[in-house]
Length: 240
Length: 231
Image 1 (cartoon, rainbow over the protein chains, first blue to last red):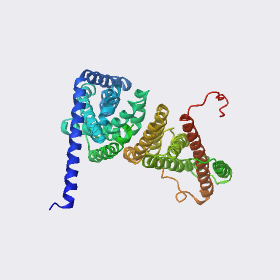
Image 2 (cartoon, each protein chain N blue to C red; image 1 turned 90 degrees about the vertical axis):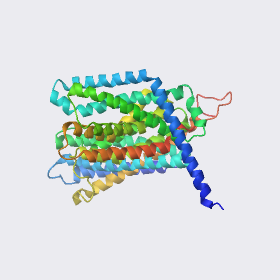
Image 3 (tube, helix red, strand yellow; image 1 turned 30 degrees about the vertical axis):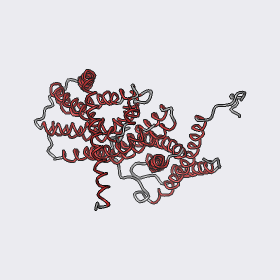
Image 4 (cartoon, one colour; image 1 turned 180 degrees about the horizontal axis):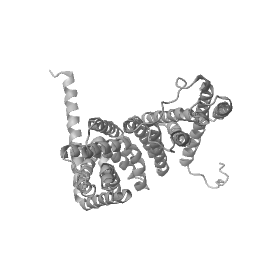
């Protein structure tokens, strides 16, 4: 005879499988969209590199000062570029009213959110990694700890992407979307930006006091809070 | 939402207390030994800080209740509380700058509390802007509530990140950390700002309620004098 809990456990596992397949389908869709609009990604990268070039004019031709501020410039460049990339992430869904179709599918809206947010993390990570050689050339900001730098870029990109994807879902449906997304996102990501800048700076300039772990922990905490919270409220944001 | 007179009475009481506490603090409380007369700004600065946090916490509670229970009442209170929080945070930054110039020698310092207040000010001002751009009242209510929850959760993260980054601010002032001679004006003003804020938030919530009701009012029958607004 079947135990009473076994059927519930089976249903639960089935629901988890369906959620996972929904998430993978959403991720695949968004990565495919990003690949097909890669010319736009190149434009966003050029925008970020131009911003890095302009930051040096604000400081002046002082090589030591430029190197000291290079981590801040990298993350500001990435933050400014991210608003362009994130603003586009819901654009196609809204333009062709595809969001309504996606929400009508028998898939968990959270799977849609996490698929898009993860696709944005990958895009911002590629953008961040692409901007690193620019700061090496312009500011002589080199670090041999490449895996650690990559991990910080991934964590920082995740910090920008979690609230950025949620706000993008709101602002894509509004007028003045290009103004509102940075207005909402910039104050919110201050802790992630601060932690990412300090961690990257410690990698480039050295970490004699051993502060890197604390800053990375703060970045992880920010990511954990916003990846859980934004996933939880996404359904309310897109419901009609 | 009711239309009783209690918010007017509360705001009036708050204003009277604020005048009383400020006159006491400015003219009758003793002069502080090290900072001199500059310290007297504490009588409005500290109550503003306490009440700014209180009204933003109230906004967070309204946002959670609006998301969980729905209903226009919580949305109207949310709009009022966010506006109150933005006004108090702006006042707090201004008073802090006025105090910082003669005390620290700079208008601004990247101290955790000051920076957290500035970040909160911009975050909640952004939410008000978001509210202004959404035409659908249901989406406006849900999105504002979501944005407030997200921004409020950020407060401890901003505070601790800036605290690790830099710190100069003196310990926060409470009746326990200041001399007994300064207690009464500080307490009177704290209740003054509190009552004033409660009254104003309730009145602003009623206004938000009426605006939303007017937005979704049924179409008028022909022959009604629209210009007078009377049916």
